[in-house]
Length: 309
Image (cartoon, rainbow, N blue to C red):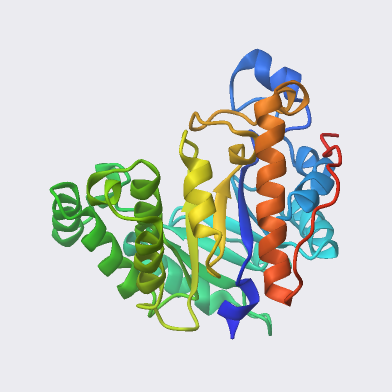
């Protein structure tokens, strides 16, 4: 089954414009739209490998020739590649001929006709996977297409955020190979922040809740739980890491960056002890997941310097 392939995996979400080898230029301009290149990703492949990343998700992806190159390099390291797209993305024949592993479809509730045409375009024997990425916490502008979406967003924003997110994901799971599990993220985030009832629940009960929620989905669904940049990312990641569902971390979490949409600050990796500690913690956590998948106990005997160049 497809879901088995990604069990215990770690997805790493990259904004191409922020993940640059030229970190000094990026930090000087403080703009995620300057300095980022595909070569920055190519130069950081050893870093991703050492962090024990198993899949990469690219947003704002480059040209098809660059996709061919980076996909080949990642596949050589046993890392799969996904592209994040939406209904306005231009899908060319050349793009469909690249050896990418799949697409994350942003706001699939609005993109039914787009996805249908995309599926009809697949010609490869091994068809790319389609992952539904529907976050009802997104801004209202994404839910103005019809009365149903407006109503769904209204109910979500007025006291039923978890329920509406879960039901929406369950619905999408019948049409997609995988789901970005924002309802699972809500469980782990609220636990990490001691929000509401989670302030009083022991950790094992929160874990049972998370585990039960994953059992609601079809067994062949790839259920990917995201973790976002904030002060509690470590606690949320630690809770999710105990279960076989794949994790998706935003770039920078492994270096203890907490502000959203900031460029990846490579000088932090060089100079900040807290960033180094965060890297080693996540590296070991993700290594444990990889070892669990193959039934090998993890033993860490030494602390090696991680790769920043």
